Length: 250
Ligand SMILES: NC(=O)c1ccc[n+]([C@@H]2O[C@H](COP(=O)([O-])OP(=O)(O)OC[C@H]3O[C@@H](n4cnc5c(N)ncnc54)[C@H](O)[C@@H]3O)[C@@H](O)[C@H]2O)c1
Figure 1 (cartoon, rainbow, N blue to C red):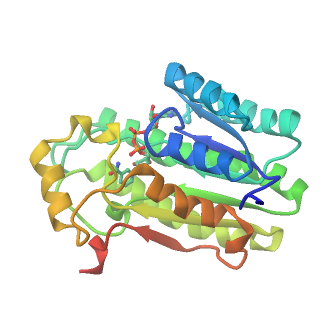
Figure 2: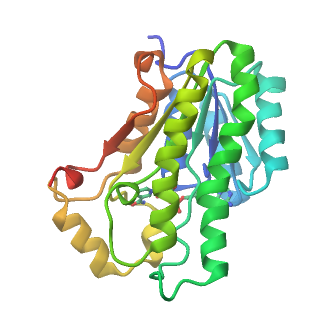
């Protein structure tokens, strides 16, 4: 059976664990050649070995999303190893400083902007020329329910996830003539290692207030990424795809 992204080449950030690892696996299972990067090299290399051991096409690269040179090298690898670049998934992100406006420090703020926002800018920037060479492409940026709805504190996280949604729309409009589609996904609660440092009560409360009554498994978010990456979404650009168990429906 044909895969849903057969013949395409994907670059994924933050693929060492959590949702990024699930996206790498699903896109590879559905026929893409996948290059994925992270700053956690050990789990990233282990996943690449696992996927290639299953006969799938995957490469791990060290990719700190705050470093443009890392992005350039990763995009160049997609073209030299696999012949092009069709899909970029800007997935890497941090919770970082959870402070409110009055307590936020310059360091906490700047770290969040660097990873969650500038990282996405760089990921889109390196994709444009290679995608033009392919005659189009699909960029998927990871926002959050907290890029649309407000919550107390977490001022830096809110700022970056809101920014990602509108950076997505700006890029979608700019590059529509090049047939480069740019969309955001807005996950609700997803059960990944990101939650390890969050208070248990807040996670439980978020699961309880999610109409479906639980957090998502990472692969449940990957199916949204797969759809946007595939030609099934050929008429979808500039949108926010909410995958949140009904949280934002209230
Ligand atoms: N887990 C949730 O509930 C949830 C909800 C909405 C949105 N998100 C977003 O989903 C994305 C994936 O998060 P996750 O839940 O899989 O968390 P995670 O912490 O399990 O995975 C994030 C990955 O990003 C990597 N990363 C961090 N800084 C990096 C950098 N500078 N360069 C490259 N990689 C870096 C981490 O090493 C990690 O592998 C993030 O953008 C996050 O903000 C998560």
